[in-house]
Amino acid sequence: MKKPLGERLVEEDVITQQQLDAALQRQRSRGGRLGQNLCALGFLEEKKLQATFRKPPDCPQTVEDTGLDLFFIADLVLKHTLFLGDFTLAELIDRVKLPAHIMDQAVEELRREHFIKVKGASLYSKSSYQYSITEPGIRRASALLDVSRYVGPAPVSLDDYRDMVDLQTVRSLLVSQERVQQVFSHLVVSDRLLHRLGPALSSGKEIFLYGPPGNGKTSIAETIAELMPGGIYMPYALLVRGEIINIYDPVNHHAMDMENGSGTYDERWLQVRRPVVIAGGELTLRTLDLDFNPITKYYEAPLQVKSNNGVFIIDDFGRQHVDPQLLLNRWMVPLDRRIDFLTLHTGMKFEIPFDNLVIFSTNIEPHELVDEAFLRRIHYKFKVDYPTVEQFENIFRQVCQCNGIVFDESVFTYLMDQFYRRLDIPYSACHPQDMVEHILADASYHGYPPEMTRESIAAAWEDYFVRI
Image (tube, rainbow, N blue to C red; front, side):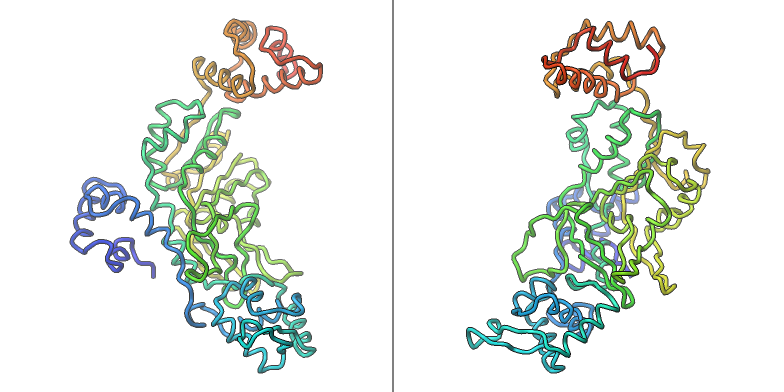
């Protein structure tokens, strides 16, 4: 059973029970998160609060602390030895990520079974022993690979994973107005939208972005991800009812240098930036379930698990190859209860945390996609509309500056009068970048410096738009 943040802080002597009661009273009357109220009352500094959420996993002192069985560890070690040939204890530790005193027990177990042997030593200590796998060990390792070809760091238990996800929850993040303004400074976004977006981000609840295409919904969603501070601890893999689920994915996860020295934390976890996973038209119901590989015989975690403690962006929602309503039905329980249920290929179900800041982005009107029951579960819904004339000009200026082109106000006026207003075409935020790219490509091909002229703008328009 998960312990509330307040109880954990009291148990760790970070705050007193009286301070917790006062903060809870303030939260009931003024809203906000518990951490925000503790900081506002002066009971806790923001840095200390955030440090609580970034506490590294403790290094296991016993086999029981790992949540694994000694025989499971020994079997995993034996599979590693099959690929190593001759090896030392240090080489095994580097691969399996368990501390020396636990690895030593696993190695001794394999020696007793005559699966490995000591080949030699440069010193009299065990750390200098050179081991090699025996013929019985090769047969045993080959049989283990037929059951599962996972040969990586030792997995962590599901209970330990739940505790860590709960500790690092996205709902613990403190997002200030100044930080929102700073992160969004490179985008031309209305003050009204930023004013409404800030509280939504601070709440950690789901966001639905909708509006006409090409006006920055995806850019806004990706910028929101930049607000995620610091890193989290993520396991390489999970062990669930004897099955291994791979979580760490170098494509979606960016490893960071660990803040603690070797041996002071559980190295089965690595520190990564808060994940940002983006799924577009390729999203299907299957990608939200465990992916069992019949050849390797272990699982790959679904996208929502890989994005735990981070941001999950559903881009171009409604353009998937599956009925949107089916996808929405799949999200009902996770969005409501912050948990998900996954099924092993054996048919056994298990509960796993769902701790994502979910952002839906679509250019289809919400009422055409979702029913009232689902919209009720999305607390924040923002329309990202066409920019105003002033905003459109600001975007054009920024794009020209970024590409080393001098912005010509007279040419911009010509563009607006001759094309946009005459043809009654709305100003889309993506148009400046797209037209400038046409100017750059044309200049590069013909060998002259790119310029914003009437001729270059007219040519870009003719190439880009259907109506001229």
